[in-house]
Length: 476
Image (spheres, rainbow, N blue to C red):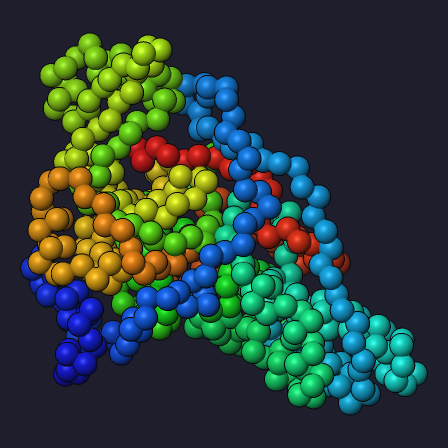
């Protein structure tokens, strides 16, 4: 058996704490599977964890009109006209242009469409020889190719509820990639380096190669799910959480290796569907309180009921106060009956989405688990929270165990934040490592599939969906 001590003090603490909470399976997993040095000595963020650029749909104001009973409040958005991406023109030799043409002709292996990159026009420019016409044509189609490989081919209008901002165009700008390809005279080598590093992408690429050409439906589904990986950062980070909504599973992943999985309950289809996000774990709350939204306090009459029935309220952990203006505020106190359960993971975002425990454990046994108002209910959430506290806040093992059992509200701030990705893949590797098709729970495949039957659209500066942001802060 691999020596556990070599994994470092952080993981020794994690193992100790999880042993205290009687998690022998996870302890054994950490002993045998956790790669070395997952947390470098410095707590400076890695390039993948740097603050993401502000998406253009960032909220400017919250609607002031009170929502009707049972509705979910939305955030208004500014009207911003996106600009087309700048595409540099550089000097191309015939050799480099021919290498680009060969790359375009083979780009179908990456799930893209060679015709998008005007191979006939490039071929004609090559035949005409070096000069302005070749520079313009080669630069244009190379830029298009880079944009699609780096950011995805699908236009933003077809990425329904996709609010995960991809930082790759900041870390790998088109001009830099083009200059490197021409300087190194290695167009195919530079292009190869743009593929997502997650093994799931490679599995889809292999599946595309193995799928017969006449199985058009299967090949189309593979293409759109390969493209979805390109909507995220090329490198997801050393340690991250990822949930695939249609799979109803959350993964704790280290060095692209799944260490632990947790069943999830996700948002119901409709306005409470879980949006796709790329955020950061900034804190873990043990024994959380829940401030009940006014759509329930006022809209559903909970505030008046709590004030009128103190015994009923006490049994459910509700405490109510009335403001000077008569507004009733209700807070559910910590406890096993709290709607957030015994743990909540903070991942600040305008949608008010987070991962949390639940007292309704029975739903984890259902095959279809789309019952929530948008947040992700997580199986064995206390175990997950302790792992985050130990690895993300360097919290001593015994302290993490004591806090989780204390029954008192305690927020543990992360000194090292971890990415958390809320994704949507209908064809992907399952938690068992096998490529599997999942139900299109929210009907989000159709617009992406349709976009692949249409001519490629020019890319703009838009980085996320411009749909309304719905605040999904109801864990019930």
